[in-house]
Image 1: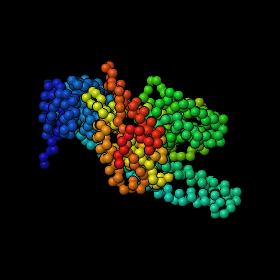
Image 2: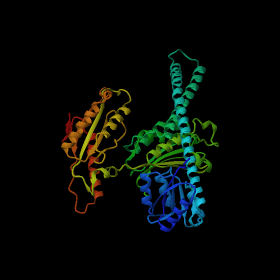
Image 3: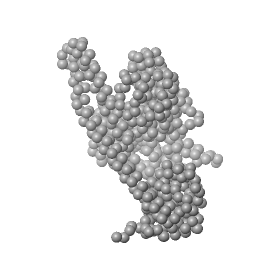
Image 4: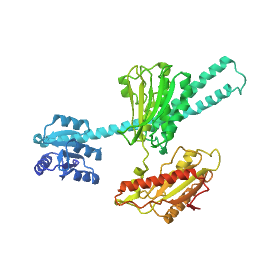
Length: 529
């Protein structure tokens, strides 16, 4: 039976070393097909065109040197085994390479044909086993997540039934209850609510691990969210006689974040702080700017509780982790809250961490990106180093036909936003993040790099696409207007970045003015019918 040919990509810039490696491969017992390139960029291009059985890689190339070389190859083609060929017997570099996924590290002067052939064979086998293990682990995680999701959904129905009937009894709708019966029912009610919270957290954690957790970023004022979170938890703090205070930096800028998700993180952190702080203690919620990191806003929740030990700090954001030294009475969950917080913050492009010492309280801090319209606009409103000539602001106003809105209003306007994104040119137009929290009427804006006439065509296209969705006709009314963005002539020394910022400032002013004007008063606007 014919032995399978091994396709080898040799990335080596020294002609003598390349010829020696070729010779050793040809001398081996196994058939090989060798392709050789002398630059890393050429090797990455070859990997894009065709996947070899193995890559033999020199670390010192004209366009890359050292550990960066194998890192770039492995990032480009993570499933292709890499064997490093080095002129130096560097034990530290060899260990670093192996720890980062390289299959073998060979010194050129010590290579025999048998040694090289065996190294390639073992590298291919090990990579195959690693890939099979990775697939098996992913399948196991997927099965576990599907199982947890299914069980959680199934548990919701009987729990909802219990909740409704206990509520009915407590409200006295089934007759008068004795005080002792009321106390027992309140205990049941509390436990049912706790189970509901656990199931919700299980579903959220499952979505996070499977990559299905979503955020809907908006242009948000953080001060309002901090006030809302504190107002919701103040009764709990008052009941425990814990001071709950707010500190908001007056320089605070708008952030690009999902307000519902950010509120979820704040409530979780503040609730934990209250839970683990003794009576007469205090909790402080702060939002501030840090000069060393101007692209983010920092939010922190500090308490005067028992603090967290070093081992717990290292694991506290992991799924299902609970501090073994915590007070048992405070364990009312599954250890998923901080894991979910971490995933929400990560989806926003921020970070979350904890600073704490035993007996000295804890401070949980997370960051959210500052809202920069200029940064969002830059890729679409400029071309070949200059601004595009015309801009139009397209306003899409969605008003529910009933109050309260029929069905899930958030899902309704999100569906409209998704349709809107398919109606614009991605390289010339931008669907702007909504401003403020979602209200009864949702307003979406598009900045189009075009003139007013072509923007009218776009508005007609948007209306036609929305009208094709039958379910939307019974839920909301759509009104679309277009308005030119009139800009002053740029100064002779004004940079492109400054011009982009000017566009962003004008668009922001138009949006803010539009939000304050009644829907019927559209000064200078052209309406699409």
